[in-house]
Image (cartoon, rainbow, N blue to C red; front, top):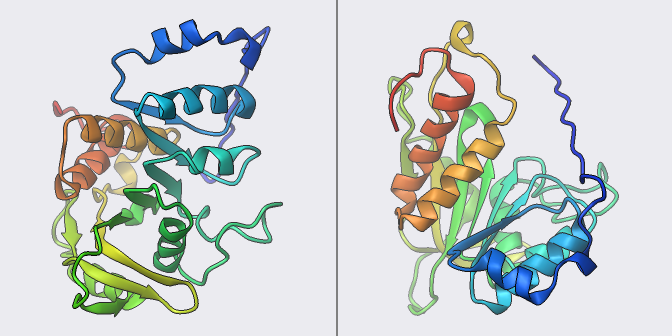
Amino acid sequence: RKTRTCIFTEGYPPLVPKDLSRTKLLSALNGARVAYFDARMPATTLVIAQEAFRQNISILVDAERPREGLNDLLNLADYVVCSEKFPQASKSYHEAWTETSSIPRALVSIILRLPRLKFVIATLGKDGCIMLEKCADEDSHLEEADVDNSMKSLTMRKDDSIVMPTCFASNVTKFRAEGIGSVCGRLYFGTSEKIPPSELIDTTGAGDAFVGAVLYAICANFSPEKMLPFASYVVSSIRCNQNSNKLL
């Protein structure tokens, strides 16, 4: 299936900022380790996100595509998961984002633009995902490398005979994106499960399943090398593959 239709409703009457007293906000966020937001209902979402920020609760933002209010949320984010179209979004949307020539370069731009970020993940559908994790820049003698070339090196390590999701990681490196800047961190390439077309059911909601698995992985303190295959496996098990009946 090449297209999909998603129906979203704000409810009736919709929840608005004036409905959210500080007492209600504190009660809703009590005990939370991570708060998840997208930019639907932007005014209300921002009020909740700002309270989570004040409470030192980590914030993950799902940046599917540029929306009203998304920039305000991203400025509060510790983690970002985005679609492959978002990082390079430009003329096709009414608000440009990075307008870079590649996704790896776009991830460098996002990390530099949002200094609070610990990592950013771009999902690539059947091609898996790319993650850039920021590391402390304490070693002035760190090797510097072009981020596009580094990504190519990681993808070349993929073994097409392996069906299950895997993860390939770089060393801590100063990744350079010409004309944009440099970021000290690690680059990860996560593969997706190879599902034969005859076994593919429906990819609707696959991105949401991936984000949910990432949230779980953050709370469970998974390493990126464990988190990315886990998230891809969750997607294939509960959203896409008719023969996946394994227990997670």
